[in-house]
Length: 446
Image (tube, rainbow, N blue to C red; front, side, top):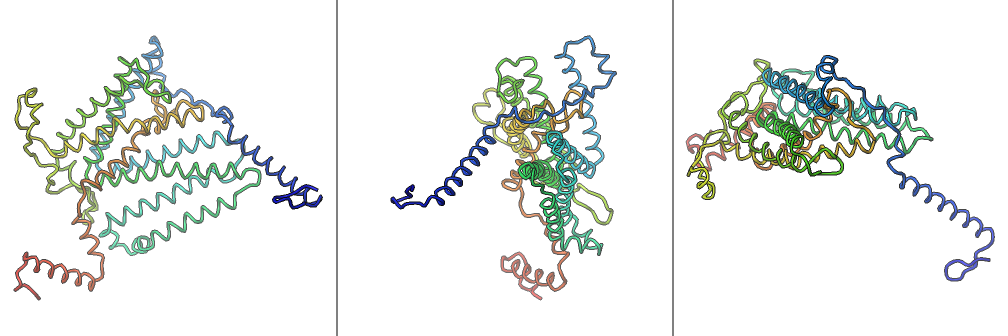
């Protein structure tokens, strides 16, 4: 008989069962090792997107080489998109919010569609339905939070909305829990691993698209300038890096994206910082861009009227001695926000492109050139906004860390929804505090 640990004999039957168990463990380990060692070549091919370039452009550019043809297509469509963007800015903040929501849904659709194309042959039950259901749930949660924060007075006048806002988080959780249970019920024995892959795929996509778009809207409420400068900086960096790389690019930047060059990266950086500084100067002069976006419940409209904060009031700064010799100036007048624009532009040009590199790695993993063929010469919507999502998070963190202080308007809205006795208690406490600080006269005690 075989001996176990310490020389203890093992009976034959037990020895056989132990041996079988060890064999099963070895087989399992080998199968798992084979799964871990699978190369990217084992990933199913995704059907290539079709060429959606308008026929009129194809005919007009038919005599050019592929390189210059792509240059002109990208340039013309870029100008068209920028013109449309300016039109939406003119239409106001509400239209900008709808634009952000539309882009979010389209980006989500493009990423989910890639997963469906890769794994559609497995016929996973409820995959697409649950993906869109989770999108609705998460949007309901985030936009409900926005309504509760910025539309409190409006909600107070609508009894139906009061119930939804009061139990908003519970309703959101119940909706998500319903989707979670539906996913568990949809599990099929042959496809457990694959279904959990797609469950994770959906949730990561929600994190990338919905969470970031919510932060974009939060930035917009702080003032349109916090929305326009970061987004425009990313667009400027994308355009100028492409131009510098197209004409002067020689040195590859990163293997994930072979067309990116150091020349384009550096040229894009300096161009973006200069653009952000100048663009901020023009925007900071107008209340429409610098005032927080607020909802006026009396007119049922968004308004951008306020006394501009110190960030948007012209100040005199001393020029560093090294620059005085070059510029010939000892002092310079500028808006404090222009200094913050340098930080925003620097992030947009140095860190923002890593969102694009991440997207390039994702596309290479699934052997696709673009996320979709929505925009000729550019690919899908996600191809154009891959850098914007990193930027949205940075701007939100930057505002909360270095800019935002207590918001009297938001605090007042919260006070107005309290019960009368609670409001009276706040009033007495505040008055007592002001008297102690000498701001109110003691004779005003009541």
